[in-house]
Image (cartoon, rainbow, N blue to C red; front, top):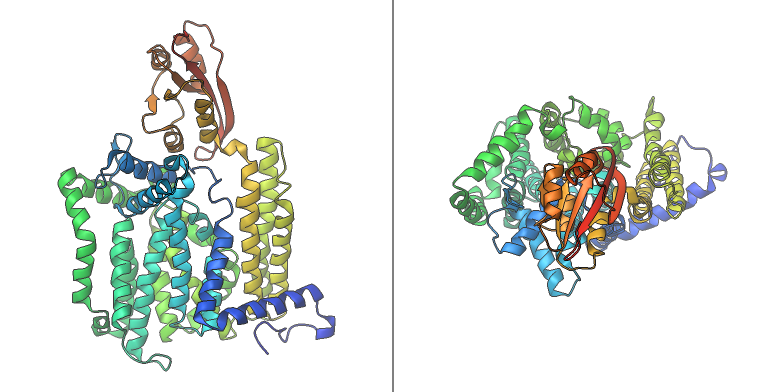
Length: 586
């Protein structure tokens, strides 16, 4: 009996729920097909990733505030030809190293070379590195899982991670976190092989190979270029815990530290030296002193959260695997002395506790830990630890249904309240995703744990297509900046100068242009319009009276108006656009 079969808690086969039986049979065939070879497994995982990440990839608006900040800084590198200093308009952006900006700029440059229209303002091009990073993270999770599991279960663990909501979101955002996760999994997968090689477990043939050592150090070096000390922190803390457990650091010599340090310096030193020279050392003061340590000391940028916030958010961010991962906790505690479990706990627990203790809370911080959670969940399943007969197990597993049901209701309500429409095109897929989640719950209750995970993954793929591909375009109220840019584009004059009074979102800078002027008063807005040439000023409603007063109390007729919902501010927003054209007095 395979783990996709009906378990002992189920009714006889003749009474088995027929749709579930068919779904489990199909799931078993898909897993068996993928597990037949590494090539098939990788192709199946790539198809899963593309099906999950591509819907809405280009149509989703720039998501304030971090994404357009990264994209705009990368755009300015192309505009200025300066690929060392990082700038957002005139402001130095000394928060993260240069890696993400380089790969985003390269993706856009390739798009321009291929003839993509207005490539520098196409947010989808800036997201390509995140898409590649997310796909690489899935494949590297499979590679890491092979150190601990057979091919079939490593495939299942990678699919479970690939289907999680947080990775799906980060794959669509032009930020660092998808690439950071890929680098982290590469380094920790290599570390796992060094650890298990030292243990001389039956499934291991000896110490880590030169190739494994190179993967470790390249993951570390590229991770430093992407997000500074984070990958070394993930890998270093894991290694420290394992060294304390072993009472020795000798096993780390398998990773060729002298060769690795030379390789790392060769990769990271040139840019760090260049930015230190160009900024006079200001980059390190800003990146370490204000950005990193500021988040440790307080809830930076209004992202404060109490300890335990990540544990609560986990049931959404790691859906559909979160409920099953929670059921694996007793197994992890009971088997913590085993080599494989000790490794996974060293990967997960220390950094998780640090993130819970740090006041600044952002859901994506724990994303590099989720591959280990997926592997641990499947490892527990393979040992029979996810037993529906345990007290409360079926109720916990039932949480898998809440996310698709909640999103179906929440999206419908949001679309109606914000835009007075319903996401009708998305509703069939949303309802099918709900049904698959319910089948996953039923499969677990009948002892088919492997089938439950596969059905959960399938539900996630459909949910992603429904939410990002079909429902998201309906929510026009969220696309404030692109709609304002459309007003500028509709002006009967080219190269209009644009200024904004009130609305300061980075997405507006990205969509309008680097030279967007940010004004502070109605008088400045009125003066801007009178300076001559083709001009457009965007006035948020809270400054409307001040702007009218600066115009002598005579209200102007707007060239256009946009109302919507500011995701970053969490409140409605209204903006009127006033135009001045050559020879026309505003």
